[in-house]
Length: 84
Image 1 (tube, rainbow, N blue to C red):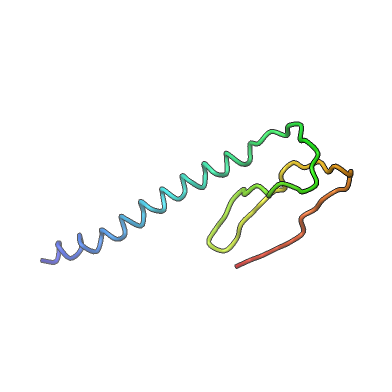
Image 2 (cartoon, helix red, strand yellow):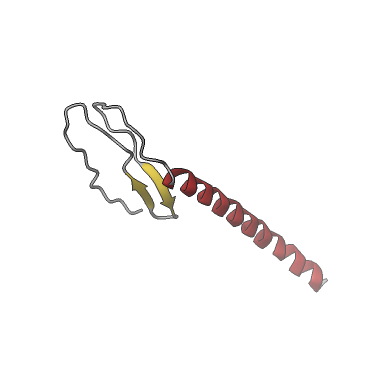
């Protein structure tokens, strides 16, 4: 009977491990997809594009500004910090 209880308790841990591995693979894919963006010629616009997500945890997200060229020649900057 004791072996049955141990196996039953093992299932939630195995499921959690599988979900963690799946999430890590998704995070790695997302990071590689966004960190290897080549700086290409960007058309001048009035509004900057959204920032690029580099990584995230349960309490933080790391972004980098997307390439941007202003129509008026002004420089844009992002200076906010948010921690959950």
